[in-house]
Length: 510
Image (cartoon, rainbow, N blue to C red; front, side, top):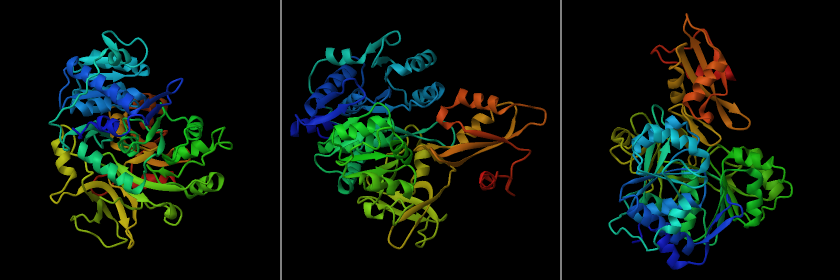
């Protein structure tokens, strides 16, 4: 069985090669491919025999990065089960909604989220087994490491797993309601790996992963492709710019990926001046346009060359790449489509537009997701009859096939590499009894790229304060989604069709 059993196959080819360094542990824990495969086999045996997990069942993880996260991902692959990575930045009520939608049999969590897990368990009976990575855990929770060590070491394969079976669910920010769960198939992972190797990776590469593993950037940009290729992944628990600079030096990393905010924070770290980044062949930036000033600063001070990319949970995530030589010359562009990705710009009639004209970016190719979990309506809406995935992004393409994102049809903005959807925030604001009308837009921010600003009209017979509305939003939303400021207005600009003119509100902030 080669589909799904990545470590089983890799352990045949390079059993003694270092696969993973868990730099979130003190001291760091180092695992060869053989050792990592043994852990995955032990966990797969327990999941199957102890928790009754079968092909297609979901196993959820609510944890900071660590070897345990990848143990679960690869054990699920062996069983044909589906890893469900939960965004630890969400409010526990949001987590509960995702769990009740995806119905995982098992929940694995790290110590920081003990209270969150207890709140979830108190509200639902969906979860049958709970494993804690550190600490004492809640009542009836099993210790993850002991579960692995006590389990039998027998190779696990599930022969009827095919490339179209789902390996994991990656949650996307929803414009309304709870986030949608993109279904990532084994086929998608394989084709994305091929695209990544063609454009980026080589045998023997070493990367430091700073993205959370619930995020497509953490699990699927370099981590999984590099482990398929037989390289080494140095895994951070959470992003710490000072630690990252040290790890790049200590483990002689050859490739690194981050978002612009991370690169800015690295330059501001206390050890930036003495940091040795000479082993890096390149850095990749995504999530938001990379300022030319950062490109120049890294090149002048550290000799770093930048590639830039564009991707999404539902496709790739390796979709576009901007080559090193274009980093400044084509600044602002997302580059050209990766080798096995077809892209074009279409008008409202779904017809291709001429170079330079604005339209919707649509994509087609084998690294597309298999729709959204338990959401056939959204799945059908995303892909047209000719198989093109509609991104909802407005973009242009020039005569040399360089693409540039112009705007986002659904009003999302990106803060620190995370997609923020105003409609979700507005939904919460409307739950406050004093709010008559509201709108949220993204505004420029030096640190995060963009942050939210809320415009609120109060009911004539009601009163409230910014602090009270902030507390209301924090009660229902993850902290990073809450706007940084609130502006009270007598009225909001309205179009003839009765829609709030957000572009007019953006002008107010300029």
